[in-house]
Image (cartoon, rainbow, N blue to C red; front, top):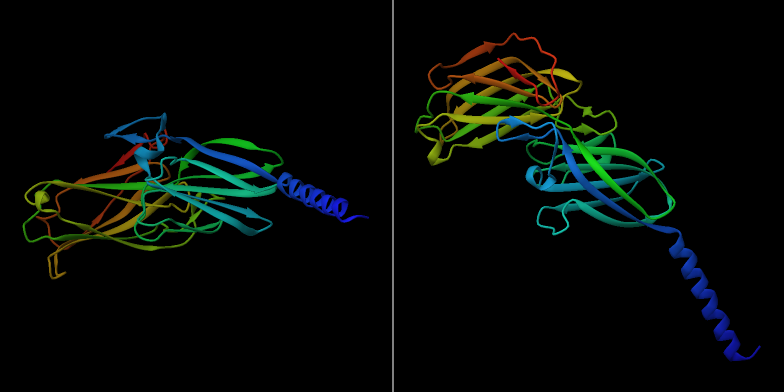
Length: 280
């Protein structure tokens, strides 16, 4: 065989190998079309909310045969936030997608173990099995993964208070996307700075957690600290009833009653998810 046909044959074989390799990959477009049952401006909307109005980060992980294939992330600064374009091998994958507003992207170790660095925020998710044999476009409506406790303090913040510390147990800071619930018994702590414009006024705070089941309870300890981290006021609320995709609300004076424990007794009333408010 002459040299020229040999070179031509080698080039053809390389081209065929390249085409075969490329044909074993598919293009996948993942788009978040909405969020189920999103709260808006102290009213409740049973429709779908917009991702960018509620979350600032997305993490999407694909697993195959029990092992993580790859994690894809986005934040709200991306011009295509809410739309992921993937190029991956043909196959069957378990997909986990998490949307939240934490300080950093979450860590998806497995579909059953998702951890967050910092405080828990309003969080939405999708979990599904993807059978990818050709180019695919998926439109996802994310489900809410958390319960909220909203506390209205009805007396004015004193000038000496610089920080509010929430310490609460009964919920989870780690999420299981397969079950849709929290999966560890957490001791969660969050600090909220008192800004100058808050002094002399009533304030409202809200915290989130992943319930272990549809209905759960929290014990919430609240401290008001001065600039030296000394306790000025303290109160404990228990049991605080929570429910997945519900808001639990409580209104109370806090800065006029010192160092006592508040016992709460309430029964949950059936209502539409997240449009339901538990008040005590």
